[in-house]
Image (cartoon, rainbow, N blue to C red; front, side, top):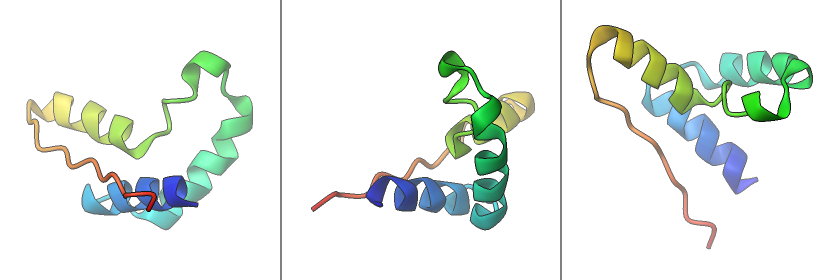
Length: 66
C-alpha cells in the first residue's frame, strides 16, 4: 500500500492528476512487456515532459514504510 501511496504522491507533486494516472496505468499495464513496466511510472512521464522542455525540476516522493 505504501508503494501505491508513494506513486500517487509523486504524481500529485509533479502536477499529474493521480486518479487519472492510476486509471490509465491500470488500463495499459496488462499490455506491457516485462522490460516496459517502468514506462507508466509518474516520474517517467515527468522526465519525458521535462526533457522536452529542457528543465530538471522533478520531485520524486519516497514514503517511509515505518
